[in-house]
Structures are given as structure tokens and as C-alpha cells.
Image 1 (tube, helix red, strand yellow):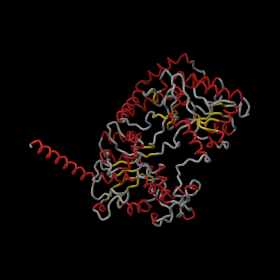
Image 2 (tube, rainbow, N blue to C red):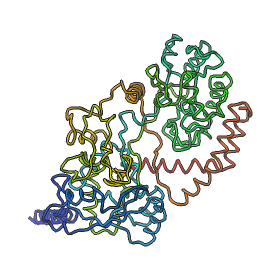
Image 3 (tube, one colour):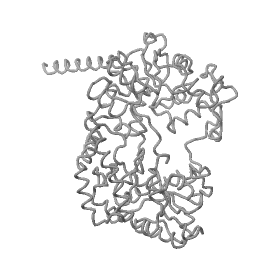
Length: 571
């Protein structure tokens, strides 16, 4: 009997705690039945005002004049007291906000860096731990997106295991962000060859292009493999590194992975290729391409304009580009994506899997807010399919437009070619679509899932004609869709997650990483060029490795390895 009483008491205490948790985390004034309104009509929540800081676009309109303010008031039932921070003074104002210790409830589009997030969130606890307010009742859309795109959750998680900002998601499985090499299939067919599957076959294919001149441009003009060393997005070396086993992307910002100074995964371990013994094989391969004229004789001097000229002249057989029509090439159907190749050190073909996270740091909540649940419910709305209207604006003449000029109502089939606004009705002083969108309609939130295919589809079905059409269906008659389809066909089955694009470091490691990269990166780039063009003998490769170690290469690599360890812990 005593055991039964004790059990009942424990159960009562548990139910009491559960009830208390539900009461604290799920205020009655929030609407949980649908995305909108966020606050129930007639509830005490309608009296709440949140303080918000939002970055102001250079041509952005005043908050009180924007359509989005009226939309929020009418359809959200939320009152916002907004400070718009001009982009020109954003960094300074953000620093002052955090230095003051008096943050607004919501911080939107402030562009907090990963170092900011680490410091203000993990170290100083000024930012709310958003993950502690995520559940199926309050944030079902955020949880759904994180389940569909686990890399986004990881990208948002700091080393302490908490989430202080929310990401902006971009569709990753439609081929848009899939880096590709483009192959002139007409040349391949003219040479009677099959697409290469190994690195040796790839080099032999380039040799055949050089020898047979399948484009009839003259042997002296043939450039089997296009691109240039100094153009980050058009240096083809990363393709060779990938073939050797380094799972790497093509380029990040202004640094090309072809130089070997960005982290890659090799057999599941984080490494900097430039200091790995396999880098010698990469240099040997690149030197072969240079010595045999399989890359441009001006490879180390070319700029993007000159590469475009070579493409337009029909000189190139393979080029590091997602789509060749971007060069102005009209015979783009002669081209297709080139598949990955293997090598002795990499028997299984692999390709860098694009991440769905475009950025973090643009939605944060003050740890001192009195309304964390309301802030999270607002965040959850931007991860729903319904939120695209708040991002792109209303359809012209609709109830949601509330008298504002909205986007032209079009069918899905012709939406690509249609103008989003009737420019004849622009207010005085506005002469372009972007100016009207940010000057009169809305800020463009850099977080959420508002630009993903399912959000686009929902927007079209609800607000546009052509409800049965699916804008996510790729049409090979469009060059962009053609090359995406080609890339998906060749590469989607061998995608593997690589080193994280977004990661967090404390201030000391951030400073040291910058310091080491400033010394090591240009040296690697210079020496790699010397090895490839023959100015330095590859017999000196071991001496080169020793030179890197003297510069602090092992410490440089160790910082990235720590990032990878933390990333795996949160996975």
C-alpha cells in the first residue's frame, strides 16, 4: 500500500511539473492551431509590444510606411516597435547594442557572424538558447525543417550544443547549388570516346581533344581543360583533388579549394590538402596538364573575361562551370555535366554534397526578453510554407495587398518571364522593381525557409493562377534547368557531406586562424604555381612541407580539426 501511495505521489508530482512546464512554455494568448494569426484575437497578448532591430536596406522605406507593418498588425495581431539600422552603420550599431546590455526582443537581418554568435551567445549568454523553446506545439515548422535538413540544425549549433540564431535555408536537392564541371559532349562524341570514370581516363580524354581538334578551331587554339589559376570560381584543380579522395567544394568566397588551403575531408578526417602527402600527386597531375598543353598556356594569367572569350570562340572542351550559357554560349545543348572520376587513392567516386543552409546570424532573441515563446512562434512562421508572402509581398489587387501595389498575378508557366510589378504605377522616385519591393513592401528576411520550392509552390497555388502547375519541375528547354538535370543525373547518387561551410570559433582561435591564413595561404598558392609551371622541382616537395610546418601549418590544420570534432559531437 505504501508503495502504491508513493507511486501515486510521484505521478502527481510529475503531472504537476508537466503542467507547469506547459503553462510556462505555451502561453494561452498564442494561436497554436494555424500559422496566422500568431496572437489570438481578443486575448491579453494583443497588448504585447516587442522591440525589434532590423537592418535597413540602402533604399529601404520607413517602417511605418511599409506594407509588411500593416500585414503584421492585421494578420499576425502582433505589435512591433522597430528600430531600422542603416546598412552603412550596421556593424557599429550591433557592437553598441551588445555593449549596452539592453538588447531588443528580436534581432533580424543583423548579420551576426559565427564569432559574434559564439561570443554573445555561448560566452556571454546575451542571446536566448532557442533550442530550449523548440517543440512540436510551439515550433513545428522549425523542427520539420531541421528534420528534413539536418545540416541546417548542425550549422546553427554552437560547440556547447545550443542554438542561438536560426538559419536561412536554400533548396539543396534541385541541383541549384550543386557545383559542376561542364563537358563538351559534342567533342567527346566526335572523338569516339565514352565519358571518363577514372582520373587517367580523364587525362587521356583531354589528350584526345588536343590531338583531334574535334571543334575544328585549329590545334594551336584547342584548350582541352579551360579555366584560370587566378579566378577562384574557374580554377579546375579542385576536380583533381576530388578525384584523389579529398571531398571538397569548388570555392568558398574568394578562395578556391584548388589551392588546397581550405579544409576538406579525406577518409572521414579533416585535412588541409596543401600539407598532405597526396598533394604531391595533385601537383604532378596539374604539371602534366600544363606541360602537355591540356590547359591554357596562359593558365596563370587568365582573367574571367579572357576565359569567356575562349568559350565563345569554341576553344574549350571541359570547363569548371555549372552552366555554359552563362558565358553567352548558344550551343549549350552540346554540353552536359561531367561526372566524378576515381583514382588509385580513391576507388569510389564522390562529390561534395551541397548544404541547405545559406547563412546564420539573422534571427536572434535577447536572453532577457519577457516573451521568448512569442518570439519563437514568430520565427516558426518564417519556416512555414505560408510565409513566402511576407518575404515576397502580396499579389496585386488581393485582400492581403491592402491598397499597396502588389506583384502581377501570373501563371507558373510564364512566371519566369513576367515582371513582378506594374512599373507604370510606381510612386514618384522609384523606377525599378527592387526599389519598390524594399521601399514600399517589405524587408527581405535572411532567415527561414521562405525561398524553398515547397514555399514557392504554396505561394503559387494560393495566390496565383495555375494551381496545378509545379514550379519545382525542371524543364530541360531552359538552360538553367537543363544543366541542373544533367548534374543531378551524374552526381546525385554519389553526394557525400563534407567539411561544414558554417562553423564556430572562440575569439582566440578566430584571431589565430586569420593570422595563420594570412601567412600560409599566399605562400601555398605561390609555391603550387611554381611546382606546376616547373619553376620549382617536385623533388623539393618534402622541403616544401617542412617550410609549411615552420610557418605553423600543423596548428593551422589543428584549428580546423577541432571544428570538425565539435561538429561531429553535435551530429
